[in-house]
Length: 169
Figure 1 (cartoon, rainbow, N blue to C red):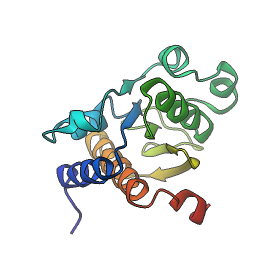
Figure 2 (figure 1 turned 90 degrees about the horizontal axis):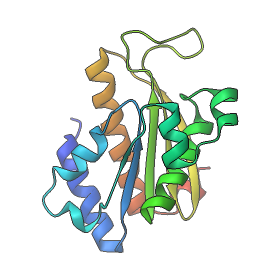
Figure 3 (figure 1 turned 135 degrees about the vertical axis):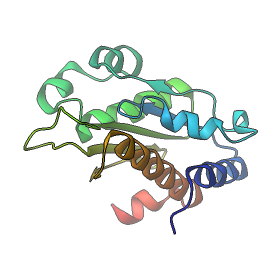
């Protein structure tokens, strides 16, 4: 049985409070879904100060420092871009942990290289930034929900075991 989004966010909050850390999210395809899940938890203001919904490329550049070169060379749905998003968000929010997501939730917008359901993730912390790409199935709502859950689970792993990035890289 998979854990609920609320349970993941609540556990994330407990882990962050234990470390006296703050988290931030830089979101594109989820449109604020990660921040919404986090702020559903009472007391989340103790570990979450701000998030960024950067749906357009211009917003990614202005708010998070994503370079035009990365967007041009790799596209918005790429590990290069989410890495810059995660690092820019962590810096702007003065957080110890960040997640960035950019993907193609559908029903249109996919290509042979990046089909609908493709989502790039970046998890940032003081030990570095780790990126991964996942392929989710289902309709737009399902892809977005799976993205939020995967982001929260990844943050939770890194909040509990901060050196995971170094051990699995």
